[in-house]
Length: 395
Ligand SMILES: *Cc1c(COP(=O)(O)O)cnc(C)c1O
Picture 1 (spheres, helix red, strand yellow):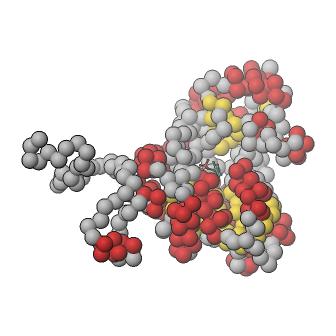
Picture 2 (cartoon, rainbow, N blue to C red):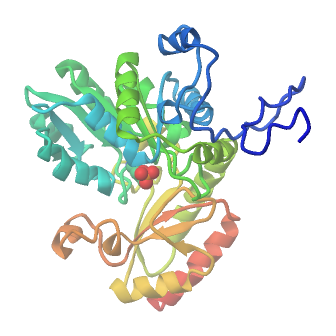
Picture 3 (cartoon, rainbow, N blue to C red):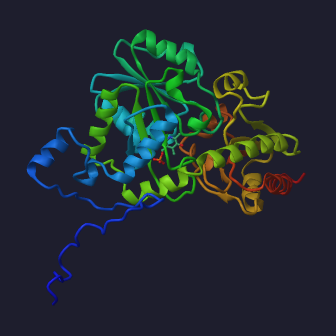
């Protein structure tokens, strides 16, 4: 063994120095960070210097993603969580206490609904669901102990648009936190803090990361003390994201604006095209004049309709089966925001727990599909839909 060789079981010295720096963010999987002295560690814990200690408490790759999303949302001090549900949980359980009451939009993401109806009540937090677009119903649901209202801007799968303006006024008047899950809309189409929201939540898993290969979430509050409470709750309960997922998400987010613009433009074209096809009963897209919330969508989303299109086929389950089989090149998969177009069928997936009658009352028949439009050539998408719908409905 030479004098400088310490053997293979000893950690290497710090990386060799370089006058130049990497262009891509380095991946930092280290769980622990070494400090020079106890004094240096004190400085760090007391916030006098910035540094990492243990990766559940924070790490460089999570910080890069958090700061990027902060900038996109016009926020600061947001926390990245291991999934979108981690972010929803950090807001509800990190900020509310037993005895509080929270109102959720009745068309929230399925697991958010479950948290509201099963887990929060078990922990002593009362919940009520109301239509996010019906300000009278929301107002009627408010109690003296109501602390938060949680809604999505554009809901799944009917693409209803929340009355954010009305909710913001209600929340201001009654001293309630307005939490907005901005996953579908993304800060490219809508920035909740500019419209009176107090808390913004994201599933980064979807459009922001955009490649269906990482699961992450983000939560931020207008009030730094509330952001900090969500961060501390995440650290304590282990909602922390993995460095590799954050690294992948950052890579995806670098092309987010281009992907979103392309997918949204194609979605608008596809919605108008599908509406002309025989065998299609109706098409739902927020910027179309025939969408029930058209006026609100135009006012809130600045003429943007996002990348989701829903439509209803004639012919029930048999036509639905034939359609997914015939839709060559499109994945029938329960997600959204991927580079590729994906199809979801609420009756057999997100809304399968409802009775057929409850589904029917929401218009979610066996022929109902939600499409997350991807980055393919829009003319090719039109051709695929034309052919698959013709095949499925015998038109
Ligand atoms: C997917 C989704 C979530 C949950 O995110 P995960 O990353 O899957 O945990 C929350 N809200 C909305 C609107 C979603 O689409």
